[in-house]
Image 1: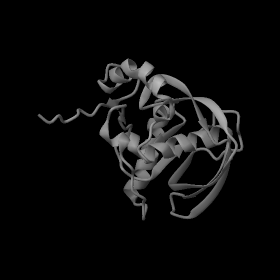
Image 2: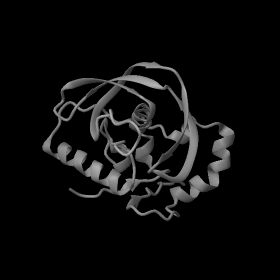
Image 3: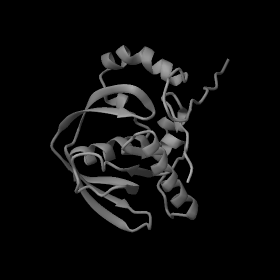
Image 4: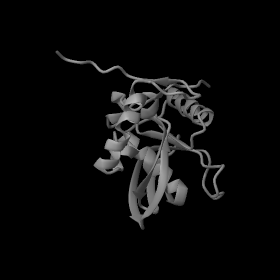
Length: 186
């Protein structure tokens, strides 16, 4: 297993929609293991493939340190699709791609998720609370959406300088990261 660098805010890959997976290869199994190791090393509870620069509908979640012992941990989720949701919940979120920023985001409280496991078997999972939130946060990544995109324009303006510093790599974090340099046209 290997630790993977995490792409930070401002990187183009974080704004791209990842394509669905049709097969799981040995390389994908290794990617899942590497993503779990990377997430744990960075003290995260969820990680999407796009956050490590891979455009695939794949995410991993492990909330084993949280209150909900009934959640499957860890779990690899391929091609996730929310087929039902209910309720509304506000909770503070953070992100390994946007370190040192935490803000309150509103999301559905309960979700019913259809996905493929690492064997490409179709599964259905009902999740609520933290598990539902983490899955939705990571699914957003697979669709090129960041948690700060859910914030008001005023709040994003307030965070602009901090986000700009992150996008330049001007951040002190304990995990390897990548900052994509933008190509500018003249």
